[in-house]
Image (cartoon, rainbow over all chains, first blue to last red; front, side):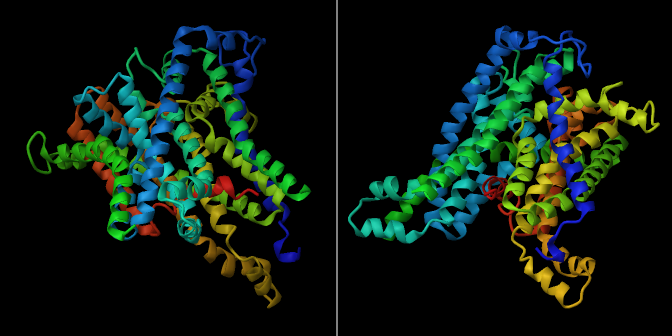
Length: 267
Length: 284
């Protein structure tokens, strides 16, 4: 490395400060979750696992977790199937029609969050889609589908079209070509899209806060209600669990890649 | 397979997603916008109310100021960080990217809750400010607290587009400028900085737009007396059932968003998801 590319000390110190700012605020939920008393005091006075016990036994929290997982999984399935199909359609069509369709399909990603939420609420209210599962499913589907469209489209754009033609010329039908050639090629994009869809639904607060009723609440809504109305460290326990899962998700690709590259180098 | 039949298939694949998004998203946004022009009487009455109501104007201006502040601060924090990411070796880069992706993928509610704890009276931030001799600064329930929390929450959205652009810049250009006698600073300013502008523009527009429509963090950390536009829309709908009024403000936000996106150019795909997906994949 020559003189022009070696980072100076000022740059390094700045980066360390930014790194701390990125991660440290997240970690504060961990000690609070083990607090002994019903308080958000930092550092906590005594330690206990009461709030974790509460999280997995209090019906309010368990049903919110159940609702969030149910909505998240269904939304992921719907978005992955519809989104992948649409991305394939867009890829085949090309031209202006495809550009217009893409614009419509990614619109939910561009419209400011609060505007989407209020618009959805105003119409779903008339269609009796508030306070029920179907409303959550539809709202989260439209909000999450852009991520599948975009990840699959970008996968398709880097796939060699000659592969499909080669398969067809060797006698494979369209379905067989899709399952054996196209799908494996775009699988990483579909997987990334599915993950985005799940996280988008699981994390969504704004639309859900309008569509919720006391009878049906997702986990972020239960957290929102809890933090607005009471001092209950259970929310810190939820946050810690989510943080641990998130860490696993973010680390996963690094580990699988390392293993596969080890395999590749050893063979 | 002839081409017409193939096109037919393509349309058929596209249709289900398109219908769902049109009916359950595009129509609602359109209907809400339309109500602002139609109710209670057709015309621009809602917009006249909007610009003549002092509270509404104050809130809109306040939101723009906070959004601008958050954008500038995240840019100042993120640019050197992304620059260092593009400089260092693959192992370090993976680690630095992990530190960005962790908050990026973390739950917004968890992160906002963390800030409630951090900013509470006699909390860690207040304690830190106390060490600096700044006692009694109001953080929770103040615009300062909202700005601090929003800056941290939106920081990953600035780092990722910046890093995307910077990792595509050929560093040999810098060495070339240097070898021809330019100082390090001059080489950076005249060669590197202009090449990184697309990333700066993408990150800034993304963070600005997200700030404008932010609701959760201002709602939980801010106060009703100093609310941002998201809270105003919520109050209009939730408490007053004033959908036409909320629609008018929504149209204003939509127009600002579209204008900014057109100004950056390159379309939306270059902005949001590009940052997200490439950020997740380019760490090898």
